[in-house]
Figure 1 (cartoon, helix red, strand yellow):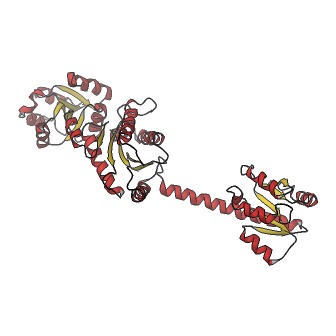
Figure 2: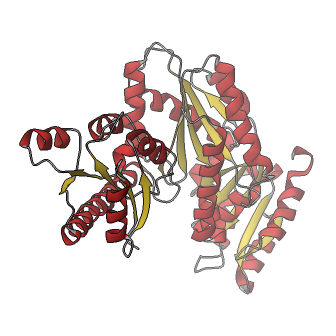
Length: 435
């Protein structure tokens, strides 16, 4: 079977002739008049592939059916071949203007009828294929391939349009960033990293209105525009809800220490373009990350981050991305990891106002020597006398371990590659009552 044909003709004899011609190739449905045709189409659920329509019928004729077809979203998509005894040019012009695809003259020639039906169906199906391909390319051009959310270019264009069209309304822009994401890739692999990105994307998509704009703008960063917000607290509460869901992960199969930080900005300052509003939200996001992650910061509320920045810090002196990622991941969001790479950077971090250092992790595992030079430098830094210094030596390198221990500088010793659970226990020990 090549499809379903609806034959519309008030003559039972004509319907019988057409059914006989088509029965070997098509499933045939019959309608004895125009109204019956319209009713069948509207309740067909898209299962009719083509309509053969007689023009001359009582009450509702073929011309009226064609006019009503233009008003029907379902019927418009179904091709129509007119059955007529008239070869008048005027009738043909009128029906073509009404959207007819082809003519079959009565009395019907079987070969001509089947050939024209096949041709119309082939043309229609080719058109539908091209339309689907075009829609697929359009979706691909507008959506992020991994998550299905809107991509950066589409978000920017849509937000620009909204801010220009209804700039007098209050909108909220949230910039959402995954905390500790680099460590997920380093410790669990890129497959878990991709899964985490998709999990966050699904969470955002499920928790905002269809009228809101949700997009991924690159890597582990997302944006949400909450349109026409009646009260700023609505946006704040929604942002806090997302942070809370990511923190406790009751329905998310992602690593424990993965959370999100959010920067929030409102369009109440006359912003009419995405870039201006995004910059404000992005600056707020930076403050939330700097203050310890897994929290919300709002543009214009700088005092919030000043208070939060008194949280504990862990200083990491290492050239190994894996060492740094492991410490950052295990520290979670109650300890802010600060990367240092020199004596000067260490001094600057220790001198920072409101900086409470839980421990200094010094990695000598990748050094060619035993690390004595590093320990001599640290020994001459009195600021470290009351701060735990944790040495990280290469497993099996007895010279590094001995130099660290005899330096009388370190409080603890760990071996690389770091074992996450052991690091977690030692980190909690160093935090003591500060955790």
